[in-house]
Length: 218
Length: 218
DNA sequence: GGGGACATGGGTGCCGGCACGGATGGACAC
DNA sequence: GTGTCCATCCGTGCCGGCACCCATGTCCCC
Image (cartoon, rainbow over all chains, first blue to last red; front, side, top):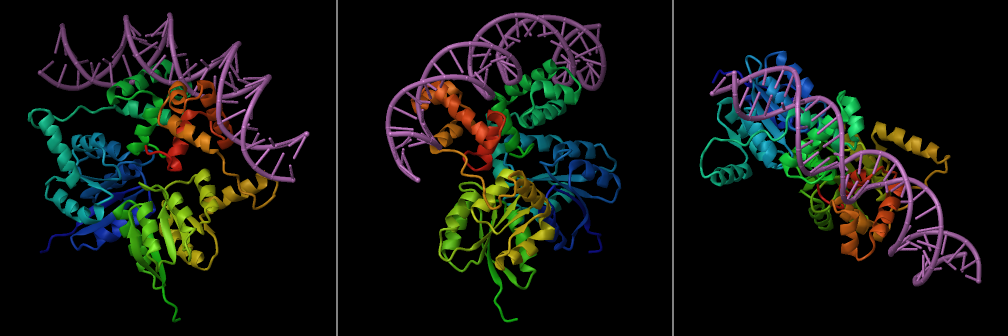
């Protein structure tokens, strides 16, 4: 085999995780980590620099989440394959990942087994989901009476996510309004919309949600 | 040098992190990972089995947090050294870690540099804190007029903790009052006292605090 | 061109969170 | 026994969260 190894960008805000993943991947002859990034913005910049076949992204990162980064990466030419590496076995994020065209979704809790496999699958343009997610997929399929590919709508918009982050960090509507340079009413509107979309009760549940999906830290 | 290597227990709920840390530590001739655990309960059980010199604990773990596990480990004979490995650069956590007698506190975001150093320091019974925490320590020392070792008292009473749990779970004062068979006013009084003691702003911060110390799950 | 999603803005009204003031009774220590 | 801590309770007042109503402008898609 004379093919060159797959060139990988690795994005995670924890140096320790990057180091561990790098050790795992570089151990494989057909995979090589050519760049690292500590947040979503760095990741996009690195891929833009070229020479990246596959981006392995953490979902929860400062400045720009993995999902936001993936949406930007998808618009690049040539667009790299994208693989999500996440702590959260969360249905919402899983479907979001599918919608931004990810090739795979790997849980950190089991990634030592699956990661290499998922990288190779991504390069071959085959989807890879961790076993637990398969159940989610099937259940979802059945719930909808087997109408197939129809994925749930994106739950929250980019703007709403901005607001969510700030709400969960404990800012009041007025503070958020000043930060985003909009009226407090609009902030409340976004927050209210999210409560309804996500089926939550108040900003406290919103906070727990944000922590669960890794948008903020406790 | 004929000394046997330091035997380490590694506890983190993410297999990927464990694998990365293991690769880093096993690469050092004087350190060897002899056991892994995916949560606090497993960690305590593993150490109880014997043969562990040093426990490297993630703070945020399911079932039992690293802090809770450390308190139990401190009661064992012989008690292992304890080193915290955490995502959170958080003052509250940091002091909690000191209080349970940790030898060190290492941030995941910089752990690839510091971890090995911190392990060796722990074995020599020297404290190790990451550079940023040093500032926190010094500031805290100065704030108290240099009275030294006096660590903050256990902040909240048992009754307050009961209330805290319910507050953090999203119950209103009235609901909590009914659950605890006291008046809503008393609930608010407890909550209010906790806010003051812990230096927090509102029930949202109270919730994040409860999640941090492992009282509830997000 | 019309329909739908999104972001933006406003008004009203209720209720709960929280700060501030006050109080009592019980447990334990010095 | 006096002092201290804790749990219990009450009133007042302000402010913010949240639900409900309304509207506008801008996209993009069919």
